Length: 207
Image (cartoon, rainbow, N blue to C red; front, side, top):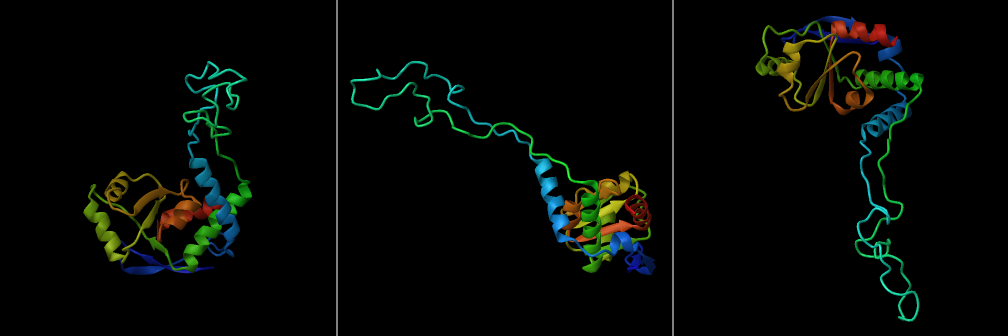
């Protein structure tokens, strides 16, 4: 079982914590992570882009000139695709880009992302993370004491308004809950900061 240091809010090492091998110690499957990230980005796409076809462009109802005798090519409408201000052939129309992945693949990708953070020493575990009031300075102090000067994903076991609001104004910091973490966010942020209670919940949910 992989072991990592357990820190307090002052950045002091207060012990060690054993992580579940089946979640934080598996062989990293890069292909599964790639497919999960692709899926999440596709599901985020709005798919609202739209172009007008020949029939949707305003005007062009009359034939521009007679069929024969002018010496020019025949045309039926000035809104055909070859005309300036004409319609678009086979252009994009509103559609959904979302699709689903098999549950086993999604779980494998998440476990691989968590294991990669352990392998790269980018996972930090706090014994607790609680504030009496909402102050950005408190969250900044915790991050500084842990020597976190890059982007970080902070994972909590349950809703904590004081922590969430204290962190939301800090650039490069995002808070999440155990049931909302995803492969894209885990890989996007340089550090993965999680509370001890959240670790236990992750091991319970994703085992």
